[in-house]
Length: 160
Image 1 (cartoon, rainbow, N blue to C red):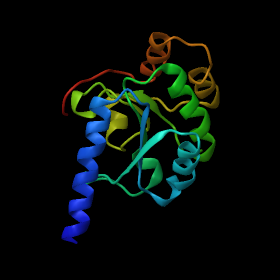
Image 2: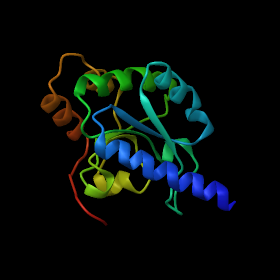
Image 3: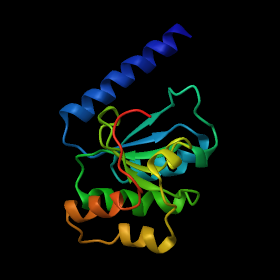
C-alpha cells in the first residue's frame, strides 16, 4: 500500500511538472474502466494522456457525474478539437464542455463535469449540434475558447 501511494505521488509530481514545464499537448482522463478505450485511442494518436483518480472524497464513480476528460489550458484549439473528435464518440454520455477558470484547476477545458459543478457553474447540456459547433475546424484559439465558455451560464472563480 505504501509503495503504491509513493508511486502515485511521484506520478502526480511528474505529471504536474510536465504540465508546467512542457508545451506538449496534455489530456487528463479519470480512471474509470469505461475511459480505457478513449485513453488508448488518444495515446495511439500520440497524445500525452495522464490517467488520474479523483482525490475528492465526494466524487461519484458514475461516469456521467465526474469531469472525465480535461484538456490542458495552453493547448491550441486545433489540438483540443482533435481530442474532442477522437474522444467524444467513445464517451457518448458526455453532456458538458466548459473551461474551469479557478486557478487551482489550471484553466483546463473540462468535458462532462463533477456533479456539484453543474448547478454551481450553471452548465448547459450540449446538444449534438453544439458539440459539432465546438469541433468545427478552423477556429482560432480565442473563438474556440469563447464558444466553450458560452455553455456555462456564469463564470465563477474560486471555491463555492
